[in-house]
Image (cartoon, rainbow, N blue to C red; front, side, top):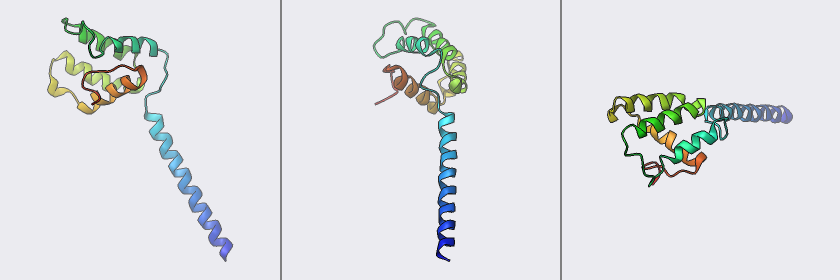
Length: 121
């Protein structure tokens, strides 16, 4: 009797571990990669947006930098960049989803070592 309970307990534990592994796999699968073919170009462009870099004040400079970032970003960030570019194109800050901006900003800071304005405290 005791071994039946042990087997049931082991089976339940194995199922819980398998379920957690699947859930973890889904979370990790949806994260942008740490490395992708256009990473160097992406990070080079991100550096142009770093705090203290001169030139972002020029008309169109920010839009151009964002467009280049979008072209070289990992596919997992395509939706975020599309929305950010759309809001920028219409020059309407109310259209900007701050969670998307934070996600993209943190991704850039973590993967490119760039300090973006307003991303981290």
